[in-house]
Length: 211
Length: 326
Image (tube, rainbow over all chains, first blue to last red; front, side, top):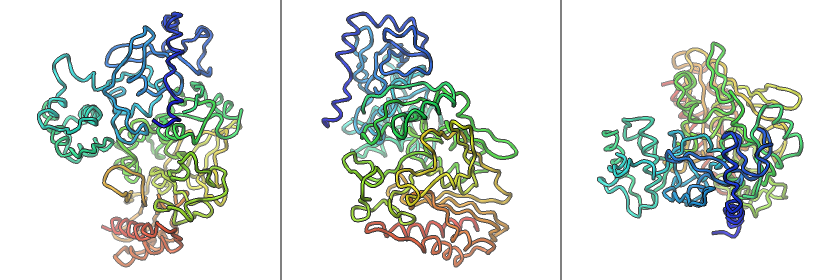
């Protein structure tokens, strides 16, 4: 990791400190759209400048309270975030790869649409329904896209797979019966360096018959 | 990224007031953030405050009426690409929007952000390079690696404007509404963009305390054909090496009026009056279309590595003209 990126670490010491003094409960007293978790919560108004905030995120149908800096990305919260109860969020399905919105490894759904979690501030994800690859299966029942990826052997190293699966599910949300060309366009924001594209496209075609 | 504080916008007056507190770079606006966050991650910009525009109500609408289109600055690129009326009657805009980046970026990137995005030049985007665009003394593309740089209008900064929507909207005769502390003003989108000879540091005429709020597009004339042709280095999503937005008012194979605007070849969307003149009033055939292509690039001054853009642009313009006649 470049030296510079270490500067934007996840504020662990502050978070642990706040956890220790029980600040987490403050958030519950604040309207969800206003987002402050500090001692100044009661005075916070829309339009105030926020440096740190306790935000509420709805991820895979579950609500999480997380202390973040304004600059913290959604991807950082998913992978490395600790909620105000001290639990790791630990949703590492979305991968940190390019961190510039180019590779698609961090793709998640926000309100049903695919987005790059590395290029969205966590603060901007408040009030939205966030779905990661971990949220697609229903218990032991895999999502049709996941089943089709297994059936078509649509991966080699597998590092890009979570992003591709979420993009595929988002595509089928919008277009339940895409043509091969529409599949290629729909998945054009994801990169597979192993080159398993033909298998991935076939898997999405198969999944589209089951969705 | 450096730390910044974050403010939810409550009104345009509040936004322009916050922007008026400093010059460029201290207070910045965030909507989709897909370009801005990349700049913050590379330390190209280190704002103290980001103002979140997404809390401003009603600015993401796309309205269609008898006078044309009104698109709010917060409308996403995906919404523009998928809008049925835009697909049918403003084809060049729909095609341009569909060609922007990837589904993930189109889902969050906005019209205002696409028009105001910063250049992709690798010298500009490199934190450690103090280039002319960032207040240094040299545009390194002139003697350096210039494969993706300007062939038209470059002096003294050879960036290309990366927007796909801008050429399409200019070809359609769009105007842009801007709000500042003194109120709102409207100008043609063509006049919004500037060349480095006028201002090497910015790509448009926005003042530090102004904000883009809306783009209006008049209804195209009857029998209009429009296209966005975009050449990329690879089949996958990418910025344009060269692009042509063409809007042709046709009478059979005869072109009554034409707007031809180039992307990816100049520091601003480049209206080719020469190519327009070559087809206007003419029955478009092979030789007229080739003349239009040749005229579009007759003033081109390629750098060391981008001679190919001259050929590419010439052929794209010719192809667009032939498509209008077919």
